[in-house]
Image (cartoon, rainbow, N blue to C red):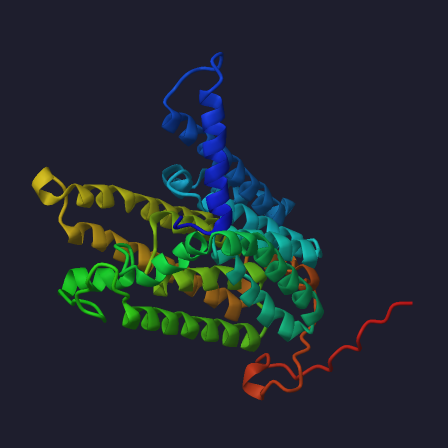
Length: 384
């Protein structure tokens, strides 16, 4: 099984339901594969409705209509049933909602479940780490991280022990995969004729250099986002950093499967509530599906040359980079942030909402908020 554990379990349960349906004579008959698709699609539709509900709750009543883009995004119309990523978006969105409602343990459990379905929800712990460090809220972060780790282990450990080869397949496949057609590395190869960092690979051969380069690029993105979060004149919002991190991962990763763009939809709406700009990006990203399908047909079957497809991929990447630039601009100029225009601090912040800057004294000066003096760390809370 080439998917993480929870996604694999979802597929297995859907298969059991489809076979059970097929075995009941008085139910409407259909091919098992059709029933299986219907069961899977129903669950994914519910998962996306949960994503919409959580996004609307995080946006708040003043900006609830921003969440309409999560419901009617062109990306959802194209990719909701392409793969199983709606499960992960539901866990990621509800995990952020639990954090926003100051329930750090529940947030960790949901993010851990999301990581067991698709690893990206666990990345959201990174922005929480640097923001909690800046605001002296490390206790809440520690509870969330511990709950996420315990949940991920609880889901994965039984499968890893009972079926070690099946459990490891997801990691083996991702280490041996070459540059994905939608990756920036393939775009460069398409237009330049470059053979890649590792050159031509034999079947099953690991692209070690590409793996190292993509990892190093993502680490550089993480370092840059952490510096921005700690150095910005006003503490960035959680959604802003989450969007930047996930977008940076997709842009630097060797794999950008089409449905991965769904990861960005709720985060983009919460980070940058400019509907026309977001709708333009979503429409462009969804449109990539058309030249992709024509490219897969092959020129001999009246399809398109590869550069038509990789050209639209490049436009998609540039659009995502432009969104990142706008988010960074609003972080550096918080007066332009529409979310904070009405005196709101951070609707997704939870324990961070309204918290003053209190970076630890061991942080060097170049990693403390710019333009304001270092504040004393608050006294630890006592119960009594």
